[in-house]
Image (cartoon, rainbow, N blue to C red; front, side):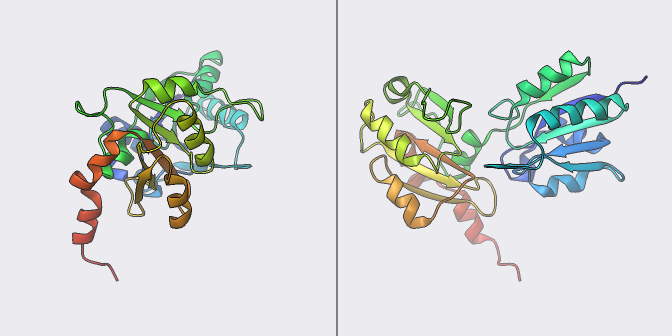
Amino acid sequence: MNIGKVFLVGAGPGDPKLITVKGMECLQAADVIAYDRLVNKELLTYAKKGAELIFCGKLPGKHALIQEQINQLLVEKAEQGLTVVRLKGGDPCVFGRVGEEAEELAIRGIPFEMIPGITAGIAAPAYAGIPVTHRDHASSFAIVTAHGREEKGKDHLNWPALAQGIDTIAFYMGVGNLPHICTQLIRYGKKPSTPAALIEWGTTDQQRTVTGELATIEQIAKDHQIKNPAIVLIGEVVQLREKIKWFEAEKRKQPMSL
């Protein structure tokens, strides 16, 4: 039996032009595309005629397919001799469960490749005018999930290390846990005056950015009704936004569409 191949592809953070050239080539060659909720649907228009499109999106408590079903889907389609693209928002290796999917493919003897993508924790701040590192402000950077696979009621993050050892911290999907994030960082040594930003729907036309301080960003988020998907960014680099923000300025220059 002729076995196909699975490409685990990063779609980028939202702007469809931020997919890699290799990622686009895989997309255009695929017989099957299994895509996530945060993938820009414009990318699906590049699929070849007749390609099967399968939605595998997840919302908190609402999964179109559970992870085990997705793993099995990839195996079954490849065993049919098809070229399969598993299209994930951002980079598949950053909180994208690509390790679980690749493990299953390896166990079942299915050929696969992992195609990196641009992750939202770097791209969304960049579009907001905030570089995550800067030689005057930040020589270290951490990406943290606000929704870990952990026992209910237990917190497994190393808050002392984050608060005292990292200059810039990007929390993924952290709006719901923002009170806890701010409290823990202050508790373990971050100054309440540390600059903070929330970037909603980063790199897309829906992008919104609000800034404040660690002690005030929770209320600011409530006032502006910021919701996921959003990046929570903590660090001195946030103060650079007022000087070098560019994306909002570019959007204002564009003529309004009717």
